Length: 230
Image (cartoon, rainbow, N blue to C red):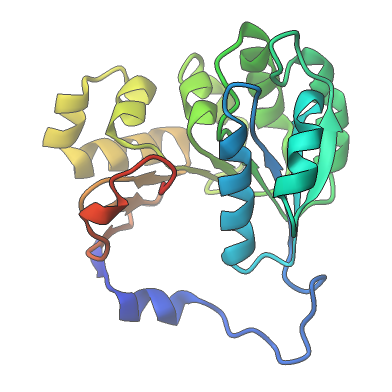
């Protein structure tokens, strides 16, 4: 079944926030992001998590970026993780990241991580182990595309992947043109096969669930066509 999402229907999906709520009421997001090459992705993702209504946000970032985080992440906390020689998360960051993630309400992985071999090992090792709901975006998707089977051990519907058409092409082995010519079919098939929720971005963004439900977002405009708005 396909639904069309408007501003009104989206608003109805948001739960009411209690008047006596506080930062501990609204969840703690752990965000694994950033590298020396892409430090800005960390800030965009953290600010986005905060604006979405999360009570607490912690950025798990390469040690080399902790100074940048201190002056840019005004409302977020930072967790410095061991990094590689190129300033990216690598194998030594796996265990401390997984220990910190144990009691968090959700985890976001991917923005600005880069594509180092060690970062690939980091992502493929962490994805099956994260117990909380997981959002994979940007470089997280590009690295998972190297071995999409890492998604299978996760509980059905506990993972949200947010690809643009190019990232969807890498995840599926199709061309970008093929993805765009059959957006609904591609999103639905990947969601069912890998038991994830797919948010296929672009004009009329598609949200496909593993149980076959689908929604098409009719809001947005071409002003969002710039890096970082995803």
